[in-house]
Image 1 (cartoon, one colour):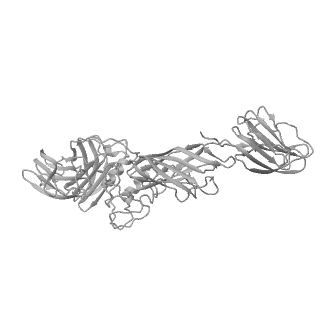
Image 2: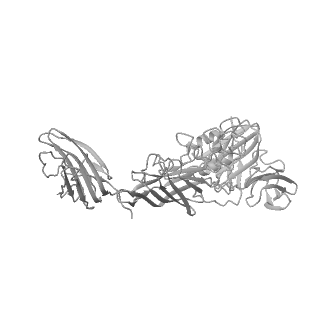
Image 3: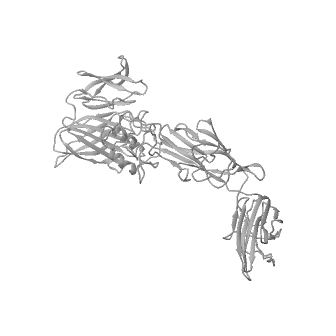
Amino acid sequence: MFRAFSFLLLTFFFGTLFAQTPETEPNSTCGDPGIITISSNTSFSGSVSGDFGSDRYDYYYIALGTTGTITVSISNLFFEVFAYDDAYCGSAGYLREGDGSPSTPFVKTLNGSRYYQLIVSNFGPVTASYTITVSGATFPSTATDVYLTENSADFNANIAYPKVGFGSPITTPFSWTPTSPDWTYNAPKCTLYVVPSGDEGLVATSFVVNFDATKASLSASAGSNNIFSSGIFQTQATAAGRLKINAANISSSINVTPGSDKYLAMLVFTMLKPGHMEVTIDSLDFRQYDTENNEQVDIATEAHEADVKFYLGDFANSSVQTTGDGLININDLSPFATAYWSNYAQSSTLYKSKFDIGPTSASGNYFALPTPDGNINFEDLIIFAIGYGKSAGSQLPKLNPAPLNIAFGEQIAGDLVRVPVLLSGNVADVRGLSFSLNTSMKLVAVEKAGALGTENGFVIFRQDGNSVMIDAAVIGGESISNEGVIAYLVFENKADLAVDNIIARNSWNQNLNTALVSNSLGSAVPVSFSLSQNYPNPFNPSTVISFGLPVASKVTLKIYNSLGQEVATLVNGEMLEAGAYSKSFDASKLTSGVYMYKITTDNFSAVKKMLLTK
C-alpha cells in the first residue's frame, strides 16, 4: 500500500498589533491564484504591507489527505486558521490558536478528510514580516513517474534507434577506414535509462525490466550519473527477458531527490536481430525515509514504457544521417541509392558499413544480422526493399516451387530500341530481380511498368563496356504477384543481347527458380551449353547456380563435397527446353568448405567449385 505525499497548501491571516480582524473568509475559493502551496515540512517567509481601512493577506492551504499533527510558528504577526469541507472553502470553521508568537505556536491534529486554510494579514501603513515553520505533517503525494528514455535529460525520448556509434567500433573483414556518419551491425547496442521525475526524495528502489530475450540481451549498470552517486546497485535475472534491479543510497543525505539528467539505471541492449522490441518496467517498489517519524515510506509510482526499433535500412531521419528514426522511408532511400554500386575498395566516401545490410546470417532472412560483403548491390537492395515502409514482421513466406518464367520480348525499333521484360508462369511474391546482360548496345534508360511501375518500384542500372547490370525491387508494399511486363530496357543502336545471369528473390529473401523462355533476342537463348560460376561465391548459406541449354535437353545438376560424396540434387534428369536457367542451392545444413557442382546432359558435362563459409 503506497502512502501518498501530495500538496500541503497553508493560508494565514495577519492582524495588527492593536486590533484583531474579523473572523471572516477573505476569499471565496481556496484555489484562487496567489495561494502558496507547501508540499513538505519546511519554513516559509514573507511580508505583508497594509494600509488604513484595508487588509492585506497572504494565503496558505493544506490539501485534502494531509494527516498527522502540524505545528505552525509565525513570528511578528497574528494569524487565523479555517477548516473546510470542500476545496472551494465551503462550510468554514474557525480554528484559530496561538497569537503569532513562536512561544505559543499553532498546533493541530489534522483530519485527512478536511481542507485547511491559514491566513496571515496586516492593515495599517506598515509592512510586517513573518516566518512560518511547518513540521509534523504527512502529506499526500501524486505518483512519481518513472520513464524509460534514450536521453536521460528528456522524458519524451522513449524510442531507441540506430545511430553513429551503434555497433562501434566499426570492424569489417576489410582493410578499410570508415567515414562518418556510419555504424556497423557488429553486436549493435541500444541504450535506455530508467529516470524518475518529481521531487520526492528516494532512499531505495526495486523494479523489474521486461524485454524480448529472442531479440536482445541486456546488461544493466549504475552508469556514471546515477541518482545514488554513493550507493548499492544489484541485478538478478529472474526469467528470460526479466531483469530485477535493486538500488539504494548509502550517503549521509539519506533521501536523494531526482535531478536533471540523473537516472536509476543504465540499460544496454545488445541486439540479436532486427525488429521492434517493447521494453517495460513493473514490480516497482520506491521508498524514502521519513526522518520525522523514523520510518520507511512507500512512494506511489507510475511506469512508462519505451521501444527499441532496429530495422535494417533505417539509415537516417528527415534532418540528419547520424541517426535513424525507427522508420524505413524516403529519408533512407536517398542516401542508400547514392551509395549503390559502391564498395569498400573504392577511394570514395560513398560506401558505408550501415548500407552493407545484405546478405544476412540466416539464409538471407530479413530478421537476422548482416554478413557484410564490402559491396552495396542487389544483396543489400533486397533486404532494404523487404523492410521499407514496414514495422517488422507480419509477413509469411509464400511457396514458389515452380519456376518464374522471364522473357525479353521483341525489340521495338525506332530512334531507340525498347526491350520489354515479361514475367509469366509462377509469378508469386517476387520482391526483387537482378539481371546480368551482355550487349554492344548502350543502355540509356530503364522504364518501369506494371507492378514495378508504381511509386514503390525501384530500378537502378550501370554499364561497363558490354556488361550491363540491372537491379530492381519493390520497396515496401505488395510484391509482384501478377504476370505482365515490368520494365522496358531502352538502348541506343540495335544488336544482340545475351543474358548471363538472373536472380529473383521473394519477401523472405529466398532465391526463386527462374527460367529464360524467350527466343526473341538473338543470342538470348544460348548458342552453346554452359555452366556459370555460382553467385554469390563465397556464400552463406545460399547461392544461385546458372546454366544454359542451346537445345532441349535431359539435365542433371548435383552438388558434391570435397570427398566426392553427393550432398544435394538440384535437377534430377528433367527434360528442359532450350534457354537459360537459375537454380537456388541452400547449404544451411552443411558445414563450411569447398563443394563442387556438376551438370550432366546427353551432350555436355561440366564441373565447378564453390566455397561455403559460415
